[in-house]
Image (cartoon, rainbow over the protein chains, first blue to last red):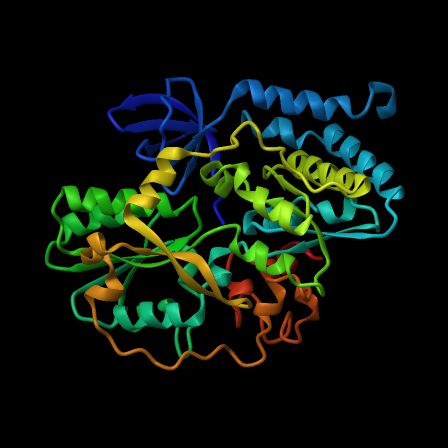
Length: 76
Length: 363
């Protein structure tokens, strides 16, 4: 439906960014993004557009909840 | 890769699978959960997640692959346009091999039609500037993740006053088909894994009416294995507690109200319209057409052209596969007449179709 990958913004040039994932650099348009983007941010890129900015705090919170489900000794 | 590998951690996935099994043991009866997005279908198959789920929890695929739900009449229309003189058809790769009533874009290309794969609608606009003597037509197929990119490309073409760029649109919206499937008592869907990137645009609140009206829990879910299992866990917990809430597992990218700029792009250029879905028929207001103000960019209005009577390939049961009524293996053509080398139906052609996923990664 809409695979998009999280890429890190390396450079911003008016309404385009250069973003990178695993050493691959790609241009992406910012025309779809309302909120501001800064160099170093992570955005989801789909079909040549940055469609969303990843919220690092939420990303961490999701992982925390996942880890909370089982206590370390459950893993033994 | 940051924001990806962490959610593929084996320990996390095993822990989540164990938690699902614990919860599922308390379920009064088995539950059928539907993942609506084609990218989810592929990720579930690719990471073998069904093998990690207990007997009581069954995942079925829904109508979330844009190529699969596109009716054969659209492919015929694109094929007819590819036959016009001085015309270049630009498309995402997936549409190339989808069978029309009597041909495919790939077959037409082999006979000399100018059909090119592009990565973005903006590439098609760039091509139109490089080939002023040609009419460049982009095949705009996709849900709310892709529609704003097509809208932005049309605005770019308008800004550059391009008279040789247009789009043959077949954009569809969510959660229309989910409502249609929820109303079907035979399907007995007890929960939805809601699309990840469509939801970055429409927002998780878009599923509230459906959850309330049909009493079916909805969890917006990411694409990684741990995301998907956490989404299933959240659904199973709601099933156990008899709840029907909308939850957002993919909170790192999805908010309640979604991407208002992308929504504005869609509203500015498109308007809701009835749409034909393979396997579901006509669903009211479940599609988008270009508004009158942008008719000059609408290839369907710009080029008057004769279309053959649309006919689905004989014996093809893609319509039932993509509504979760049957599994790929239940289709008599699966693995015999229909395979990736000789695809009969769209669910086998598309890289996100459930038949393609079942073939490549097994059941």
